[in-house]
Amino acid sequence: MAATFFGEVVKAPCRAGTEEEEEEDDEGRRETPEDREVRRQLAKKREVRLLQGQTKTSLEVPLLEKYPCSKFIIAIGSNAVAFLSSFVMNSGVWEEVGCTKLWNEWCRTTDTVHLSPTEAFCVFYRLKSNPSVFGSCPRKNMQITILTCRHITEYKTPEAPSSLPSPFLKALKTQTYKDAVCCSLLEQPNIAHDLPAAVLSYCQVWKIPAVLYLCYTDVMQLDLVTVEAFKPALSSRSLAGLAKNIPQSTEMLKRLMTTSEIQSNIYT
Amino acid sequence: MASRYDRAITVFSPDGHLFQVEYAQEAVKKGSTAVGIRGTNIVVLGVEKKSVAKLQDERTVRKICALDDHVCMAFAGLTADARVVINRARVECQSHKLTVEDPVTVEYITRFIATLKQKYTQSNGRRPFGISALIVGFDDDGIPRLYQTDPSGTYHAWKANAIGRSAKTVREFLEKNYTEDAIANDNEAIKLAIRALLEVVQSGGKNIELAIIRRNQPLKMFSAKEIELQVSEIEKEKEEAEKKKSKKST
Image (cartoon, rainbow over the protein chains, first blue to last red):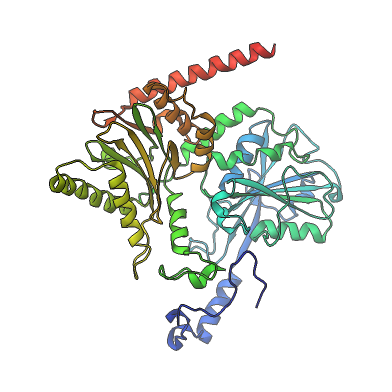
């Protein structure tokens, strides 16, 4: 039994009566040794490959050793990426220095030998004009900024969901990050998940200053209002000076929106 | 989490939530924005038009529908649920007219739709309707009305409201800008609706659809050209306001 926050129930017996889904289905549920073997074989085929710049040849050395930097910014999710592309990468010339491609058993391609040539999981850029963003500084002076989004229904709070000022920004930082954050910190019991959590944990362990800016929104697809919710982050030290032309950025953002409209007839 | 109490619609959670109804309200947020404004002599409905696939017939993708000659509604949420609700409402409008020889009042048809929605929050084996609706029109007494319904079956009268994606942002804009001056004449009310939508519509005027009802007149859908005209007027006014601001500061 875990503590409950704000009235949600954790593992309490259901008063609605027995639920059929809970009954054991002996035939379907048990995993056979063959299933386990198939799973093991698939797991062996998981691959993450780091490719270099335009040549797309494999990079043997870790990227940060080849291109040491003082500021490392990661954007995860379509809204965070759109924010970075239109506000930060629109000012100044950024060159692609590498990308990663990966394959695991949840990927949609069945080709395990050759990773898809077009789909890069992550692309790395560096600012040509400003050597300090990717400069020859030792790793200790590196500062990491992570931008990502999460659905507002996952935000635990005593307030009613409809009263929350969606979208809004919350921050989570490592112990060594001493600069001011541009929004309030993420309150308990909320936590970071997935890749941002992994990066923050790594930074906390290795004492690298890092901050996560997490935008809670009710539109997870590319959305103007959500992307603009990241704007306060431009005043933080990590992104300061990187976004120069705000009106042009807004124009570029609008263009990104029109090129990525998804047709769905279920919702109107 | 809520998983034990969110599968059956007829089950309350210990702290009084009906999770399926709340989840239905999330489904509404997946629909594009719709805004309704009640003016002095006009009611306006504006919607963000969904981008239509190349081979799709645009006329069949409509967010604004007439329920009768003097009432129309815009919805946000599940398209198929909206179709069912609209059909039932249309039949009810005609049935009412034939039975009591009077057209429905806006409040009557809103109450009908809301009651229908509420039934589906209390029935076993059915899920709630995943739509919110903005219903506008004029009653026989000549007073303009705007009502909003949501998946739980509640309905309220509003002076101006928005539903669908980013509805909160639009509502905040309306709270700041809905003044007696702003709805003083019909054109100003129309401009307010368009300005509210432009706050959140991704690509400007060409993705907006607008409908108005004036007292004793049928529903009028604006053409793309008419909307563009309004949008360019709004942009001109914005520029002039900004010029004045910069003059004042210097």
